Length: 111
Image 1 (tube, rainbow, N blue to C red):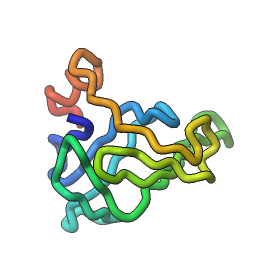
Image 2 (image 1 turned 135 degrees about the vertical axis):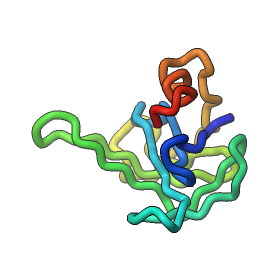
Image 3 (image 1 turned 30 degrees about the horizontal axis):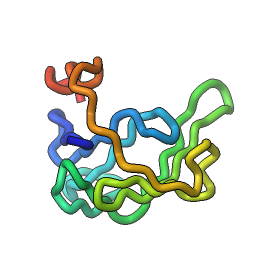
Image 4 (image 1 turned 60 degrees about the vertical axis):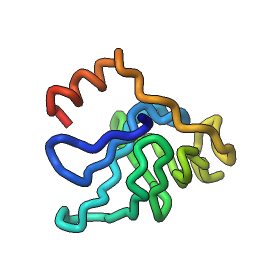
């Protein structure tokens, strides 16, 4: 399993521990939730989301973490405008670590 569906909101898909930026990516696939909407192929092991995912996360003060990618067939294709070491590269999405604190928190319904 490479992505999970949030337990708090149906259709909120979560990519934990992005191999490029190290952050979480939340992708809304439920048209009943206000905000940006992505298409999803329904496959938790080889997910595809459309269109691209652009995440801008504030860190400290004016600093921010930016990650821009396409997720297709279980691979994450990082766009060249991502300011991290995987920019312009394609890698397989990692399996979710079922021993991680994220996974236990997700099982408890915190996401």
